[in-house]
Image (cartoon, rainbow over all chains, first blue to last red; front, side):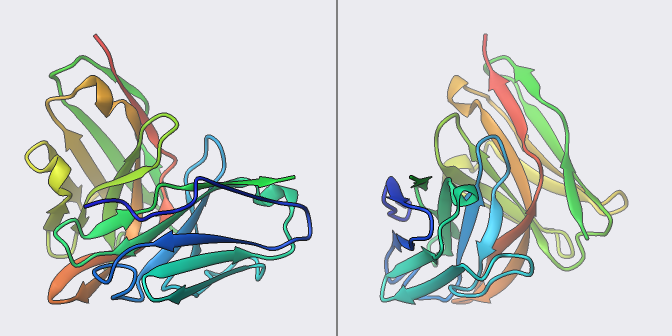
Length: 111
Length: 126
């Protein structure tokens, strides 16, 4: 099964807001509220930022928020900071035999 | 706070096997699952499979069926991932992560992943 679709790159200036989309199908993103988002800095392990579409784990900044409409989930980062520059991946449960799908990743550049 | 500590980097020949370990410190796997993913150089994240230690249930991505084996040793709070018949395109960083298990559409699945191990680089080269 194909990976979830994310834009390859997004950029924004400090203080601005950006949104990263994650598009799937009714068998994954659209069918379940089991979408999560991960931040990965170069050479580091991914870090959970959002789970169950819109929930933030303890310790994750309020500037990170998640939402979903139809088959597309979104991660919004407000008040961009230099430290937000990283790769971001979405993931979803899927009813196919694959069970778990990841997006291809989005590189966020803070200008 | 549970931390996952993985074994060190490996260099393997094509056709051989590799086993990567993932030990939970500061806690146990408890009722969570353990999942394995990999990331080839400069590439995205690819899910390989997972295990629910309390039941021993394993699930593997179709791409890795027949080549990967995931297991746990609850006495040492350690999970293992063995990948056989290695090829050069298996060169990647392999990560374990604790996973929340769910029941959806009548099937066991894996939801979010946290925490993650530090990663293990496996290089396949002749």
